[in-house]
Length: 325
Image (cartoon, rainbow, N blue to C red; front, side, top):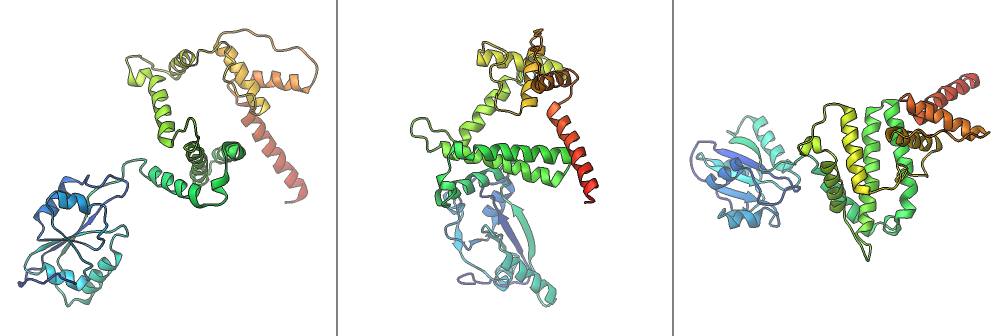
């Protein structure tokens, strides 16, 4: 093992394989990890550029750059010694496989082997990977590097509809994938926004904005307000939203480019929630008939878009049946 010498003695000793997460800042290790490092007879790491090494050395831990074999480790642990191996990103599979082969031979007294996670991923940690991957794609991919907010807009609509389809189909695996596709749109747009010459913003700014909004609109969770029913929660939300936006009309903020039935239902919902009694426009034509149906559906708690999609699917199945498909 390069420059790792084997002490004399018969006790098998102990090997500690120390793993860390690259998603946690280097040096932020668990207390058991620091204890193992401080009490070890030897600390080894195959990667001289491992991000943990400067912090370990700053803490007074002598780290030896070495790539031991399984046999080397067995010899180094003889006499009851403890060797800590700071694992690289791959987790040292060659080393652990070699120890397993030695154990299977039955001819070697192996040291105790302990896998000690020194840092753990927090919930949401893989989002950091997505941000890093998107950053590289934006810089190196000929297609992605040329995209704009306007050019990507259609994909946001498509992915949203595919997400809705997965929800309505009850396909859990598809739901996970489609949520990822929608999340990609958010990260992609945020990455493009970083390049804006006048008012750039990043994914952290996006997250910070929605966090602040959620906290402000949930005073019953983060403040002193009380809400015991969904209706009371909605009332809090609408009241705080109205103060934030300072809108002149209850129709302000309703996206007019959404599908027609959804738009009609949203307008009817805004009017009803505000307590406004607004007669539907009286005119001839299918459009006005659909408007009346959408308003009726909203009043009855039915999503007209979802209802029409369900009916359309039934119609599709009937067509396929006639075709013999």
